[in-house]
Length: 207
Image (cartoon, rainbow, N blue to C red; front, side, top):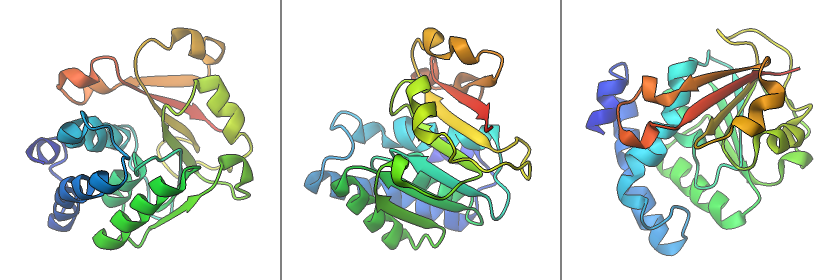
């Protein structure tokens, strides 16, 4: 938490309290339902919370912005972002019911009024959103196929509506066809931890 506050000194006391509660909540739920790998639970704040908040270094969602988190798993990046942007609306989906159960329990305990979470596949979602976020649920081209027609046109934020995709490792081949359409932000420019050395945020404007 100290690291997070140092990177985001604008966090209110309520936001700090909500983020601070995530550690215990996920430890408790992970004992019942394995939503975070055992080796990662001790690094929750760097590997999951801070990683999710890299998106907040790229964009500051304005009030009323609608964001869908596809393949949210245990709630990342959606839950940290919903805490950070309490006046934006977040819709978290995953195809695995037990993961959404954990998400809904965490949302309820934290009193997050700007989050809706459901078990469903993105192909079945009829609505359009301002932004779609995700943490590398599949190869980038495959992800774009899954979410096509799910982004509404608009430029109410500092970036036009589009995709914000957290990705690590070597993905040069994946993004080659989109080189002239994407922006890549190195998370190591925002955070000094070794974990972020190869991690990126890929932004692509919606059609």
